[in-house]
Length: 121
Image (cartoon, rainbow, N blue to C red; front, top):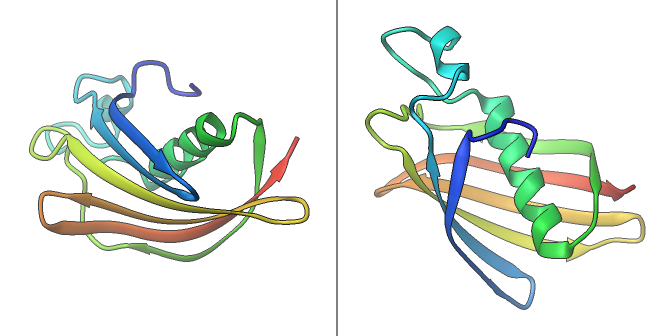
């Protein structure tokens, strides 16, 4: 985990190439002291790292993000108000690694959609 104690996986289910992860963001993490004091916002780069780490855990391989496309941050993830997230990952193996299509939600709100390509390292 690149950001120690940034999030906790509360549930992870994998069926075929589809995975659903329930995570809780740690509202007391150091990252939120600078992003932003009094109004914490989960950094997008941290969300992208979480997706990479979940994918690594699911495929049991170390990965390097080669590219990202269709990245859409659609709602602010405030860990004080909505720390519980559901991430759906559609993981497809490629010749060099994996292509992952992700949606991230809290409650009934779509917060993030993206597609990442990872190389196996």
